[in-house]
Length: 69
Image (cartoon, rainbow, N blue to C red; front, top):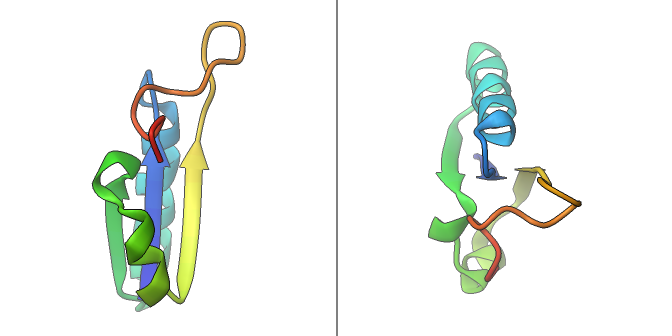
């Protein structure tokens, strides 16, 4: 399974993640799409393939979602 995680302030990185999920699902892959706020560091122990889509905003600040991660 491909885990696709996004952290986005305005939705651009989320849109990229959704497009990637559709692409991989179209190729017959199982995909789990989630906000980075919903991913725990401990989850990384069981993830074989991880795609991260994250953006910056303002003067290069990280998005509020996923900030703690």
